[in-house]
Length: 260
Image (cartoon, rainbow, N blue to C red; front, top):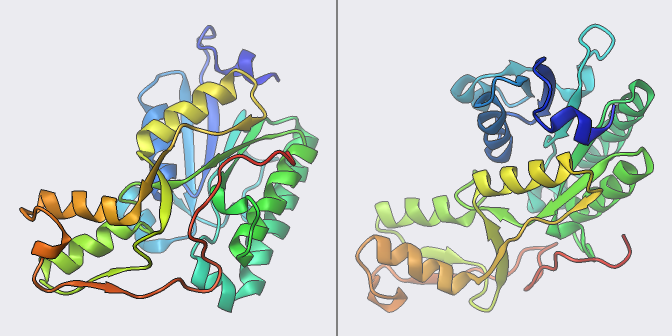
């Protein structure tokens, strides 16, 4: 079934969309986007007990989903291990989940003729972290098995974002950690990312790069501090602590990669 036929909204029958990692920050945005329409029945699965308890969905690993027992019309694959420092110290589970299990799911989807989009990251471009390498391989696998990929930067205020960490430090009047004042990152609102990806996916795009904003971390921190009544970082008395880059991190990320 062609993606554009599936998602144009011209058909009245409900389409079943599976969102893996559906209790995560971006996964929730896809669930919210699709459940707002009567055209879609959304099945959200996640293996994070606390996230599922808080946000709903099924508690299960995406590798265990039975496509024979439950026919699906479309898959949005958000599920992955994502923390860079954990990947550096725990390569095996990252490789198993982000590459091996993902590959087997793509094989199932190709066999059943189910369109899918793989959610990737700017860290897959010229990767230096294990996480980045696993997502780069995931991109290649997605295209090889006939799917699409969407590569984006950081979701603002997601569970892995620096903003909640800074907000907590400010609330507790503690020094605010920042990796490097020169560091830049791409950011995007979760709902905006979901909308852009869904729109391009339904129009048959194979490589989707949502419009993200490139921001210097120090400038982002300044904006966060302004929300709390501080004009700039020097006004915050507990101070700023530069902790330095961790293994696998880069000063700048890149979204475009000619190799694809």
